[in-house]
Length: 105
Image (tube, rainbow, N blue to C red; front, side, top):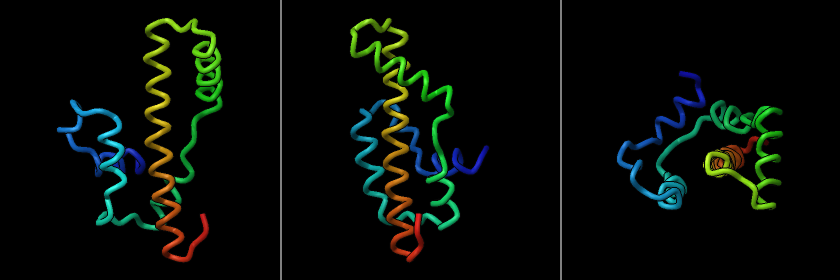
């Protein structure tokens, strides 16, 4: 398991599967007791979509705006959005961690 996946799995709870994304994301914001090392914080900040994923996400976004997504594409687009929301939260936490330690992101 790569470092980032292991970090995510540290915060994962199997009981969350049946709960809404917003409930899960709100719990992530409440992880005050969880310590993120500077190295892991930098690793989280370095995570980004591949150029192929960016291209696919843009294509799905355009088709969503046009109202022409298939059901499978709608699910794929929603998955991208959920993953990017989670990544944004983790990256915000990483920036806060580095700021508290007097390091720059």
